[in-house]
Amino acid sequence: MSAELTNLFQNGDLVKAIWETVYMTFGSTIIAYLLGLPLGILLYVTDKKGICPCSPINTVLGFFVNLVRSIPFMILIVAIFPVAKLIVGTTVGNGPMMVILIIGATPYVARMVESSVREVNSGIIESAQSMGASTWQIIIKVIIPEAKPALITGSVISLVTILGYTAMASTIGGGGLGAIAYNEGFLRFKDDVVWMCVLFIVVIVQLIQTIGNFIAKKTDKRIKN
Amino acid sequence: MIEIVSLNKTFKSNKEDFVALEDINLTVNDGEIFGVIGLSGAGKSTLIRCINLLERPDSGKVVIDGQDLTLLNKKELNAFRKNLSMIFQGFNLFEQRTALQNVCFPLELTNVPKEERTKIALELLEQMGIQDKANSYPSQLSGGQKQRVAIARALASNPKYLLCDEATSALDPEATESILSIIKEINQKQKITVIVITHELSVIAKICDRVAVIHNGKVCECNTPTQIFKNPQTEPTKKLIASATFLRGNNKCRLNLLIFFKTVI
Ligand SMILES: Nc1ncnc2c1ncn2[C@@H]1O[C@H](COP(=O)(O)OP(=O)(O)OP(=O)(O)O)[C@@H](O)[C@H]1O
Ligand SMILES: [Mg+2]
Image 1 (cartoon, rainbow over the protein chains, first blue to last red):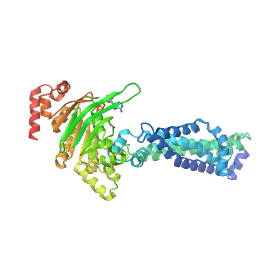
Image 2: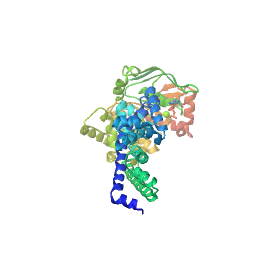
Image 3: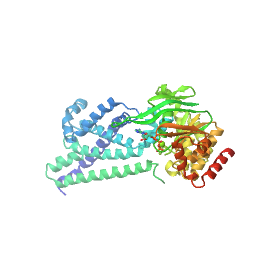
Image 4: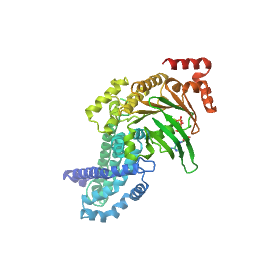
């Protein structure tokens, strides 16, 4: 173990970086969901075969979602730095990084939500329509509850992806494991620092995945028990 | 009373248009069980889906109790649909809700207080003989039990009409029998008018008062089951009857037996 790594352990920088990675990931995922969930559902219901077809909304929304999705995240970070600066007032630190993460993650989440709700059996939605449920009632009382297990699985996948984004973003600015791995490890040729950061990221991913799968399974009533 | 007046429905696709229903005229009287029979692809499901406007007809009227449904706006239609429940071949229960919560659903839509809707739902489940399954999820129920939940759910809004699209086609003979007798019972006791879509003549024979035979999107014959069996007028009807397995073999004898049972019941 190199002196640098020992030092990172002792002065608490590593623990701080883990915490920063976790809160940036969860924080931006939560906000990305607050925005992406309604967007994903809007994409789904306004589809030509959806319950409330509206081609103009669907096309425009789909275009922007695809636009952001098609830009590699690394490029997006650099490209939207000025936007982040406008919103947060500074280009350094975790604040602007979160803004960038949210801009990058929201379209991803919207598509994830769209594909999750698409899994709801169309017959079930039709039966709700036959009972006289309004579009809003169908969204709130049928689509979201019926898609819940898929939505949870999707949010786990999103979390892991956004964790990757967080690590990537923090090499450019802001804190977190990515910053330590890049600045303290890679740039100073300390391989063990890099590997230690990788190890922690792997552990975080495994934890998220395991807990998420457990919750998804618990909530799914389609599984016989 | 349900009146279907010169109803047409064409499915448009990129390649070519497909005429699913052509100039349908039918009247379903209050209190009867009206059957619609035809081969697969004849347009039966499309017809029943046009009745509650799950499918919007291209032209023609669907008049229920004097109201032409095609003239209603979305909100009025949703309100009207509470009169017009539907059950499906695939049951279409909410999989993340218990049987009880499924039956509560139509009552939630109209904001019936929780206590009251639970009470109504429990009564309906009891009527269907599955009160012990109230807290089971659909994945834990058999096909027959699922259809009972679906019927209870359909009855929860206290409808005047019940539309059944192949409600027994996914069930074994025994479950079919019990579902049919439930349908018959709710028709007689609760005076609910029922439209039954099926491709099985036995279903028609057992519960229907009148039946329409539909072929290639057109109604080719409409009469009582007895007349249809005894005296089929058109080619498609004759073919349907000839193909009915339960009439094979000692044809005449079984037919008479059937008619006998119908008159006795
Ligand atoms: N949404 C649709 N788009 C295009 N064609 C359709 C659509 N729905 C139904 N059809 C066509 O209309 C015809 C009638 O379909 P329908 O489902 O009403 O038949 P059915 O009599 O109920 O048959 P089954 O006994 O198999 O259920 C079929 O040929 C079908 O391919
Ligand atoms: Mg059908």
